[in-house]
Image 1 (tube, rainbow, N blue to C red):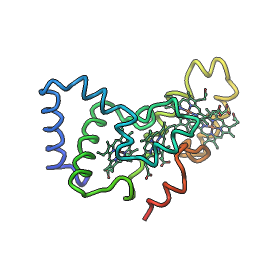
Image 2: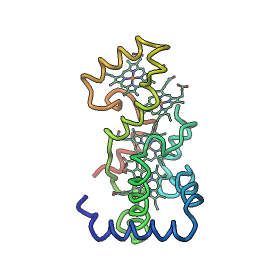
Image 3: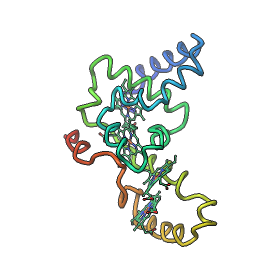
Length: 151
Ligand code: HEC
Ligand code: HEC
Ligand code: HEC
Ligand code: HEC
């Protein structure tokens, strides 16, 4: 949040300009594409290709809602092109709670509760003791590569 402020306003302007330029829908489709993410996150893309989740788009685990994604995305492009962050090498922030919300949306649903009540009951119990799904499950990204980016 600290870096928002003037950068945030700039990011918002960029988004507005992109939409005004008629790129709205097309730009949206481009920026949720896995290959777009891979341009800056090649390592994560490589391990994801081998993971259980390779049919799940990056954005489905990493979204925090349309508006936030677009603002944050524009800010990330800015940080990258101005050389402030190299997403391939620099440590990146993590939001495991937000990711967990997205895991829940797919895996802990009413439909699954009907089919597999015991799976859901066990998981409700697990979640009383764990802050996030990642306490027990892998993201599917290569942990060693992730660790190399830790300071
Ligand atoms: C132009 C380069 C670029 C592109 C394209 C890009 N990112 Fe990022 N990404 C970054 C940068 C820079 C950061 C670090 C942002 C920060 O420090 O706040 C980052 C951080 C992240 C993080 C960790 C922090 C967080 O917000 O959870 C995730 C996850 C992530 N990106 C996923 C994605 C996904 C998914 C896509 C495609 C929809 C994507 N990125 C596209 C540059 C990029
Ligand atoms: C099954 C859900 C899932 C999918 C699909 C997924 N990720 Fe992730 N990703 C995670 C989780 C979980 C973390 C780590 C968060 C944590 O544990 O703190 C993470 C972390 C990241 C980070 C932060 C890396 C760091 O340095 O810590 C980036 C960048 C990222 N993912 C990009 C991507 C990209 C690009 C794709 C698609 C090619 C993708 N992710 C697909 C779940 C996913
Ligand atoms: C968009 C929906 C979606 C999201 C979001 C998602 N998953 Fe999945 N997950 C799937 C699919 C599809 C599979 C493939 C196996 C299957 O058919 O169940 C899978 C597989 C799995 C498996 C292995 C199941 C098996 O059969 O071995 C685990 C564990 C898992 N996910 C946990 C998570 C966690 C933890 C997160 C959050 C980081 C997450 N998932 C996010 C859809 C999703
Ligand atoms: C305390 C550890 C723990 C936590 C936290 C946890 N799980 Fe699990 N998960 C397990 C274990 C153990 C299994 C296999 C036995 C079972 O089904 O209970 C499992 C199984 C699964 C499976 C099915 C895998 C398969 O082989 O069919 C999915 C999907 C899954 N978990 C998703 C999640 C999601 C999403 C979260 C977060 C909301 C989560 N788990 C949190 C321990 C955990």
